[in-house]
Image 1: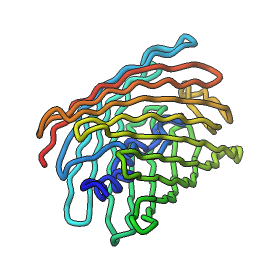
Image 2: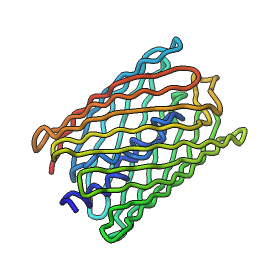
Image 3: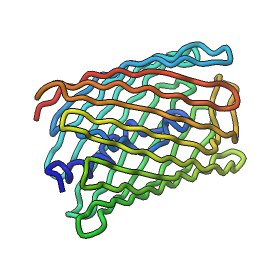
Image 4: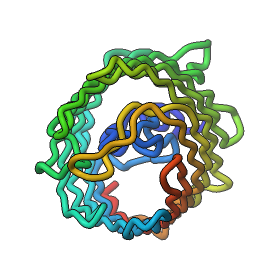
Length: 273
């Protein structure tokens, strides 16, 4: 196995904050990006814009994330300022990933919104991971989530996934998320397939497609899409510029019966490894 294999295993759980679904959209409910290989201490600033059809205004965000390792714990924080549907909002989150032994690790996350209708009042998530096979290069995951929204709806979810780490710098990942939304007992399911490739130590490329049903998606403080189909595709490139600095760029496209959304994110990271 490559020298960074065992750290990369943990990357499945590290960015659970990114994965916290602050919307009901597939882009927010996918498992964490397996490409991220955070240092023991690092922070990243990301900004992006999304263009929407259907007469909706553009979205914008500025996000700061940090990661720090303490013994068996890897702590992650996120603070994001957003403007969506012509409404400003702020989201904050914290994740603790803990190594249990040489085959098991787990993560627990909490996220809070500031009252904006498209953010959660609060949400909590927990995941358990296990490394399988003699080389520990297959990782399974199971997770539970709870999402309390300002419009009064509640999501309860079960996530299942698996990731394969190959000898060459290639990772394949797949997962499914089952969700029950109330009121109405709306049952939905979302799937995703992702791949990442590291052609050299400085570069990481990833691609992901996601599709399925969503329960509730707020469009205004008083209006939501309920029980609908959606699809999403994304591409990302991360580059380590030198020992201390890195950059990233990603593009994505999402669609549901009401609108399509296309955007770009650019990030700058500072590493202290």
